[in-house]
Structure formats: structure tokens, C-alpha cells
Amino acid sequence: MKVVIVSPERTLYAADARRVVVPGAKGRFEVLRHHAPIVSSLTEGVVKVGGDMPAEFSIKGGFVEVSADCVNICVEEKSPE
Image (tube, rainbow, N blue to C red; front, top):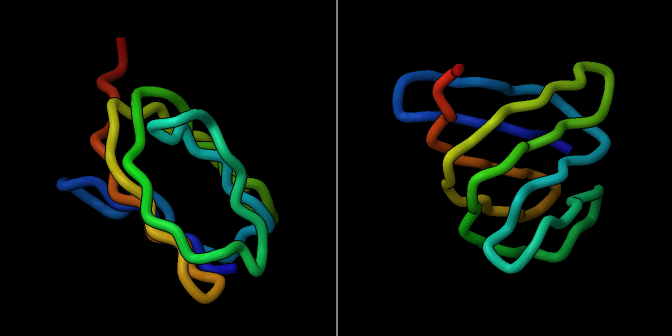
């Protein structure tokens, strides 16, 4: 599935992935291929992308939209400490 993660400043990730784990407003959840369409707000936590190009992003919050094997995530990055 196609995963795109953006912040107001830049595109953080754009590639195919096998799974994405996000900190949803009602709890952490995982998105796999053929996931039902969903829109959810995100809370502070870590977005984890699994696949050929694995990645992790610490976020303050944001939202996720899943539709037709596309995952679009808009986040506010957490500042490095």
C-alpha cells in the first residue's frame, strides 16, 4: 500500500509499505493492505512504518486517512530533545 506522511514543513515519508502503526485518538491501531476506509485523529506518540523502507516518527499529533490501499498521514513532528 502507498504511504505518505507529511508535516507542515516537508514530506517525511512517501513509499510502499506492508503496515503502519499509528497512535489513534482512541488507542494505537495498525493499518494493513485492504484496510477499511477510516479517518482518525492522532495523539502524541510514534508512527511506525513496516516494509522495505521501515521508519519511525515521533509526533505531537495529527490525523490519518486510509482509503483504497493508500494511507495519508498529516502530523506535527515532535521536536528532538
